[in-house]
Image (cartoon, rainbow, N blue to C red):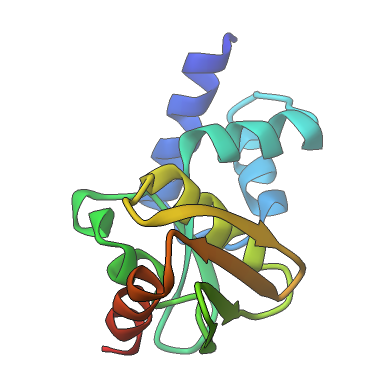
Amino acid sequence: MNKIERQHKIKTIIQEERVGTQEEIKSSLAKQGIAVTQATLSRDLREIGLLKRRDETGRLYYSLSTQEDSHLSDAVRDYIKRVSRAGFILVLSTELGEADVLANIIDREGRSGILGTVAGADTLLVICQDEVKAQVIEEELHK
């Protein structure tokens, strides 16, 4: 099975099941006779651009990025616990292990006024073009 077919199967699993871990996806693929290494699965998930969302009970699950996720504040709300600003840098606090996912979402969007991101385990620095852009984005995130 080639990469495109495998990624299509992964998207189908995400749409049909509420899976929250890579192991659950790997297990679903195995049930369909598709063996995949953890490294390949991780790479596929990054390339597909999956988001992790929280359901009403707080459980995380994978979701496909949709058109309504095109605004920065819509796509990141599920991840952010706290927003602070230091001049032209925004400091976003997340749950442990979610800062890099959030960084990928922001970087992929390519929003004007954001120069780049630096992610730790639960903290994300968003480097903005200037203090004005940082303030506008901060206000958006607080809405």
